[in-house]
Structure formats: C-alpha cells, structure tokens
Image (cartoon, rainbow, N blue to C red; front, side, top):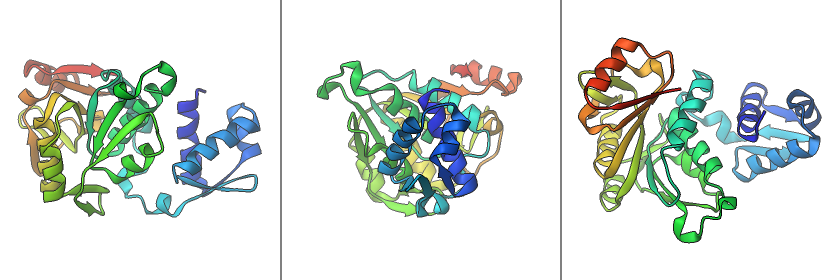
Length: 262
C-alpha cells in the first residue's frame, strides 16, 4: 500500500471508529509503527486528527463535515478519478477547484504529485485557487503549493464560499485549468449543480479557465440537478469511472468532450 492509499485508509478508519491505535494500524497496513506515527503527525498538522499517546482521535471538524465530504460513496472510484485529473496538470499551472468529494480527491492527488523533490523552483509552484474551505484546510500546510482562497459566504451544506466576494475574486484571476465537481452531467444540458449560487461560481470558474475538466463518478452522468453550470461545448475533458454507461459517454464525446475513464 503506497502512502497516498494509506493516508486515505487512515481517514476511513478514523471516520468509522473515532480513534486509532498506532500498533494496530501498523499491523493492519504491514508497515512500521514509525511510519504510522509519521502519517498521523501529518494528519495532525492538517488538523484532520488530534494526536494522543499511542494513537489519534478524530477532531471536531471530522464530525461536522457535511455528508458530501464523508468518504463513503464510491470512494475508490473517486480516488482514481482524482489521480487521473491530476495527471492533466503540469508544474507551474494555475488550477481552480470547486468543492465536493471528487475535487477533494483531486486536491490530494495534486499535492501528492507536485512535491518539492521534483526540483520545481518557487516560480514554478503549483497554484490552486479554491472556494472550498475543506480543500483549503488540507492544502494550507503544503508549502510547495501556492494556495489562493476566494472570499464569500460559507454554505453549511457544502463548505463552499459563494456570493459577491467569491465572484469578484475569481473574476480577477486567469486559470490554466478549472477542475469542477458537479451534481449532474446531462448529455443535453451539460454540467449542473443543486444550488444556483454554487452554479454561478462554478460557471465563472469555467469561464476564467483555458481548459475545463469535469470530474464526476458514473452516478452523476444523466442525473438531474437544479441549476446549469455550463454546456458540454464548454467542457474539454470528462474524467469518470468505468461504470459509466457507454451510450451516455458516446453522446458526451459527440459534443467534442475528451472522455477519460479510470
């Protein structure tokens, strides 16, 4: 098990049990207790867990995360989607990320992939622009990532910042990539969100980007949602999982979208 998978498994164990033990985790993952302590210390620095003698306990933030941020539904597929989307990003790029479970996996994959030991100078650091509070919380301790967070009003349901302050910030920034999680990707109407304010911010993020990437697991394809983000003609890439229905993917490709299935 690599470190990326192990860190995610640690978070899963914490969410399920509320506390973890170093010795038990070492046996479970087949690694040394020192490795587990190092992983837990990193999660502690990100304020995702609180270290205790011999282990760690969940922080208050973990209990309060909205349901859409809990790693339960299609977690493995979303990890793969996140890693595949991260492969589209080069050193020095400016990436916009909205909120959601899949974009959270993209953020983790980007932070893991673009590390200081690649020899990238300060002027070639990856820049991530986000309106998602949880993503910003994870990335703020990543010194090799330049983090830009919009202002705005926090939505309890999604931990995303919306409103005029968020809009004004994004309107002044040019992005290489907008990587967007969506509530639905309709072959006829395009990317959609459940909330109109989130849709407005996502629409602007797409407009400010050179390349638009939608990350969506197969359950989002042909689903229904309230507010339109952008049509398929504005989307350059779709990254989804192999359970996506072929007929739907064919219609999306016909609109000129490059589809990546993982």
